[in-house]
Image 1 (tube, rainbow, N blue to C red):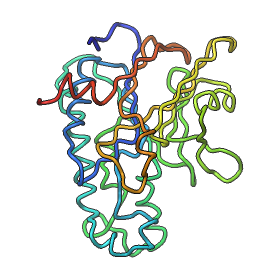
Image 2 (image 1 turned 180 degrees about the vertical axis):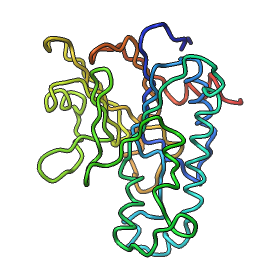
Image 3 (image 1 turned 90 degrees about the horizontal axis):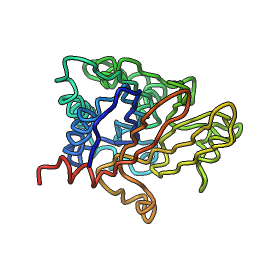
Length: 265
């Protein structure tokens, strides 16, 4: 299996890694090895890398769940995951990738908790968005725009954690999600959030073909709350090759393939 890069523009894109104290972070070493081998132009993290389970508003119905979980452990697990991803690629002396990150609804839990009760905010003893160290991990980081994920374009591809549907800011998600992105935005677009994979290539678009991509997830474990939906999630990362004005060749690399290639056995 070859992941070796060419001289053309290339991006490695992933989303929804959900670094979790209850799961191993070994998978992030595999991802770092892949990025080192591909040596892409960009690495794009489409958010929800941090889990922030202790700040989950749904657990308000079950206070014991919040008490039994630890904010600091989530922060440490997330920063450890980023350290593991970046360790091997950082060894390159030349032609290093640019790293672009996005805030998702899981990172946004920190801001929501502070807005709900400002007394919990604090760099040393409270909670703070700065604990995610986004300035350390990313060359550019796109925080929420008001109450929705930011949208930003690189080489003619629009990226966001999710694209809103309708007037109420809910995330677009349907059976033909990739197609729906091209219809709504009339440009190439890539999102995460749903944990599912969807891809649509609109060859007839003018002046250039466009692509709608939902990039699955990089989660390390199943979730009890998701039930049968766990089976619909696709674990892995996308490599975009020959990036040019929204056009690219797509290569999907499953997490199981990364484990076979880079795992410790």
